[in-house]
Picture 1 (cartoon, rainbow, N blue to C red):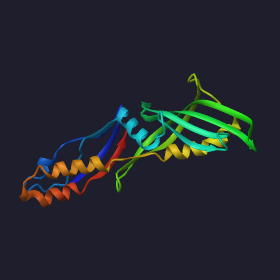
Picture 2: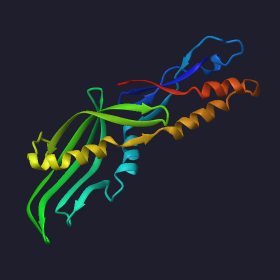
Picture 3: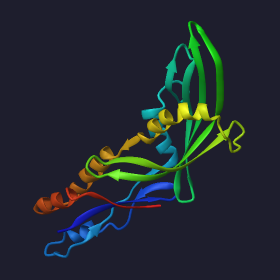
Amino acid sequence: MELIEMKLHLKNFFRISALLLMLILLLPGYAFSKTVSLPLSIDYPLLRSLVINSAFTDPDQTTVLLDENNGCRKITISEPIFTEENSRVRFETKLQIHIGTNIGNTCLMPIEWEGYLALFMEPRIDSNGWVLSFDTVDSVLYDKNHETAHVAGIVWTFAKPLVYDYLNNISIGLAPPVLEVKSFLSSLFPPDLDLRAKKMVNSFRSGEIMT
């Protein structure tokens, strides 16, 4: 039985790539088990646009993770950027934190911090729903001048769980382009090979993720 495997490569762009052997595998009498890989790419600018549309939907590419007591406790992230660094996805976002103690209408002892958070992430695909997501393996904080920064313990302890939880749950649905590829491939073959073509197309699965 032929198997269509989709391998994710990451080198300045996402690529699910390898060999197009479909025509050979569908020839009558061809019975060897083969793995076919098909190309599908998402470059970093497109990935950024997809993430903005799904996770940074407030004005000016922002999202407010927390806004309590008229801004006395507020966390905002904005301006996401995706690049490649050391064979990993580098996901950077601007980070603004405001934390104080609210008494009546007064915000006492407010602490403000503004800078950037860079997450170094490994991509993964859920083949069942064809969802691309990321696991954070490292992170770095920078100040407004992009110098390595250390945030006051109370500030980062307050903000880190909310920020990480939100960013680590960002995902991209790949089902629409995968369905388009399936539909396109199915249309290439004559009616007498229709059943075999459908079996192959329905065998789509994600392959090894390589960076």
